[in-house]
Length: 196
Image (cartoon, rainbow, N blue to C red; front, side, top):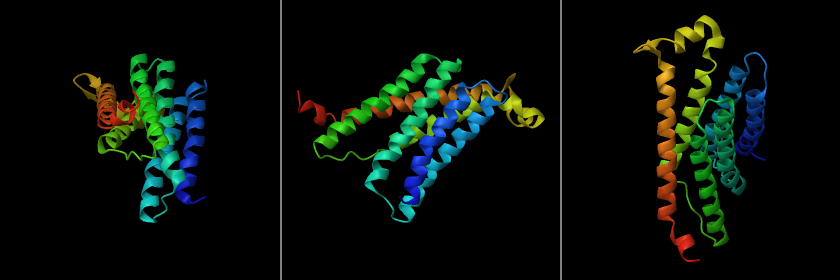
């Protein structure tokens, strides 16, 4: 197994560690969850960059890399709902979109059609990761003492900047998730329209 694929597989393990930290009740668990989530997000960037640079693109990577991304982000949003950090409908939009697109790709594969990723979908993933990190920072930065409060607690209009940036990043992620999903389904509608 080449290095990019090893990094992809490691993201599954890091997702499990992230979820353990999210659901555990120990001191600084949110900070530990943030650490594992950021580490998993870095592997997402690294595996693709290394695979393209060294020409190590494989069928395993093509299949498992986006799957690992979806499991990481969907797990995060579901965990945030469980912890009371997010409204349930946000996670529903995220998870429903990912399931719909995965289903369409499976249908395409059954017809020997390859559906490439689109630019808007890549931005969607970036903003889902940014929003997830923002949520985790918002709920953990006070655990970092004076440094955390100095960096993340300074105010704008009477609120810590993380308090307005987090909902903004969530809204951007939700809008991109919905729009990119609708666009992808519409552009590839021939796949399911021909079966009607």
